Length: 179
Image (cartoon, rainbow, N blue to C red):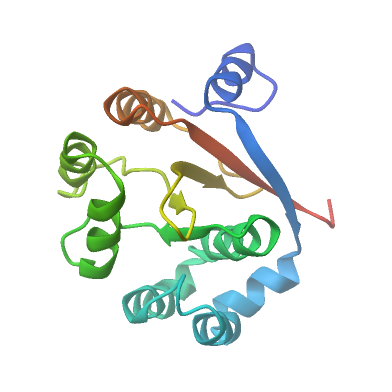
């Protein structure tokens, strides 16, 4: 089920998960990411946000037009609030650095739940695991581009994740400035 903006159910979902922030972007900026220019630049400038594996995935999948909003959100959270983020796939065993950070910050029960969603689970955990550099606070953010919507399976998983971790899941929305 796709939840459409303006529906009463979507308003309830947004109230439940809460909009953390909204950022503005342009199609031209996103196209620079898709062409690989921003992937190279951002991975060089923010090695504490994006590791070699993130870069490989973004480069390999850039033709699909994905990952831009998640990367840009992580950068904006760092610049506006001093927060670090693990982008996508932090539940997967193949991302050892992300799993180590996650394991150091969350309870064993929360870690086990998050790790269980990394077994080719659809849907996956929220796009960003966000934390203070000192580890004193953490939470999740789901990033949605201008035309993205929460799906019912995501909502169900996110509600389970909130119960398992005791942490809120926030929404980060992007709006195209041209529209």
